[in-house]
Amino acid sequence: MRELIWQLVQKEDAALCGEMEAFLRGHRNGHFMQSPRWALVKDRWDWRGVLVRREGAVCGALSLLLRPLPGGWHLLYAPRGPVCDRRDTQVLAALVEGARAAAQEVRGCCLLLDPDTEEGDLDAHRALRALVFTCRRSEGFGAIQPRYVFRLTLGGKSELDLLAGCSRQTRYQIRLAERRGVTVKHWAGDGMLPDWALDAFCRLMEETGRRDRFLTRGRDYFARLLGALGADARLYLAMLGDRAIAGSIAVRYGDKVWYLYGASSGAQEDRRARPNYLLQWEMIRWALESGARLYDFRGVPGREDPDDPLSGLYRFKKGFGGTHTAFAGEYTLVLHRGACAALQAGLSVNSLWRKALRRLRAG
Image (cartoon, rainbow, N blue to C red; front, top):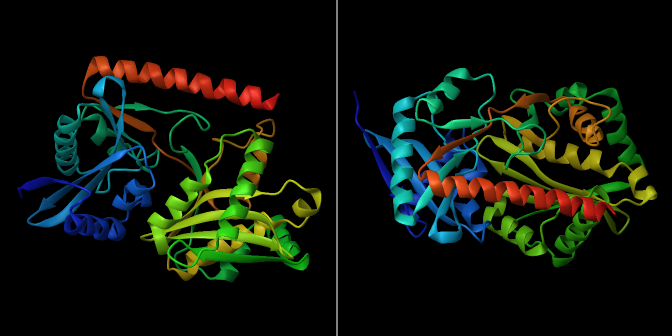
């Protein structure tokens, strides 16, 4: 049996971070949230990385966000990690051993993973359960990352193929937006992103949050996100004349592109122009031009339900021809039972607080 060696990566070690980045980009399970650069977006979190090598070659990586908690404890969270063959229990065990070492440095109380492993992948599920992880499967948007998404397979397809895969209504709405004069502009995070464009997107995001009753990120967050991800992130604006009436942010990493944020004007004239359809199509075109294998529409409800307030979001994303996908859930490894119990209680209180705040904002 070939020996596995794990090593911790500090954010100051440019060479190891670069090696980790190259592995993540080239791996089928790579994800932008596992990139060391994602830590630059999360300003209240520290970061550690774990690399596992077999005969010198990297075969697994785990990017850990470290969140300080009361009492000097830390939560270790690996968004959409680990990146490896998730059925390989030996590599997984080595990654967890490295994570335990990182936890000892910062008094970590628990390790939380939410891999984008599909629910039906029982071998990957058993591999984590064998390492004493417990699994929680939330419904709706109750998890940190969305459990349900739509994913569109791009490999080997042309624009005509992708349009043909859309619903008839979606194709009509894309063309309607063009006929009504909507144009789309975009800027990369490492380019000359004008202040007015970021300001316009943030205004649209705030308006969308008020209308749909959800908490929104501030301008500083979006500026950090675009700056940290650089050429891998794009800000899109749908314009009607000289007015921005909708906007979105997309991220490309490895062989995938994600639709990360979207916002739009609530004015009837702007909504009738159907800008969100054209925005989505332009992001899909970018994914196709980039040679991406998958386009991820991100979160949707777990099923199509006309009584669900988010049913319109479900139908909108479904119309582009993607496949509804359920991920396995959140996996927790308890490192200190007492501190972890206190954390879980605090998270429950925070969830109740957010629900109360939404009710207050709803009036």
